[in-house]
Image: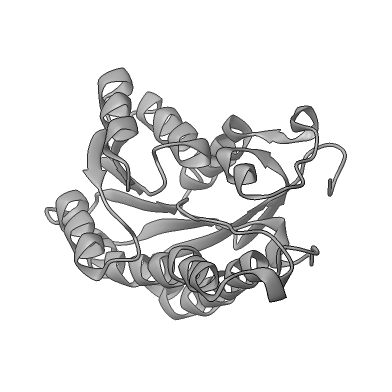
Length: 232
């Protein structure tokens, strides 16, 4: 089967783990990210197709979708994994406007726009799957994470509405809400739970793989994946 996936945020963390896992399962993966070096390393190590892409830039998104899905034909299996994101933790009154806007662009506007951008190709192929990697913070309020959680909650709602609009045409959108996951994202905050209690990025990647491999007669609209100790 012709299976092609776009994975954003593929330079590290959940995106990188997902790209590696999908390639091992026979997917052709277009690994997108802002930094070239980790993408080239991924290409060398597992055969990903590296695409430098800042998801906040319209032209970069369009080029990414064209490179990955421009030749999509009926019957192809297409997937988008929105795993790119950023965080600036702290009391909302102390988060700079620049950091607030950066999170809105990277965590909400960019992924939502990519969802829109891939739909024509997915419909040419007869349908596709989108996984928006969000956070339990989209549902659970945390002090110091108002801006971050707000952007994730916004994308959750966009995905819900978009899913209702496009599922009759064979497109499925899943919101994946992981709890604390051991990724570089925590470097943006002063408080870091014990990493031994977090989910490994590979666990989230395995959940993404399972969603993409679901038979066509079922869908998962939303999945909350938590570490054993719950909210940390």
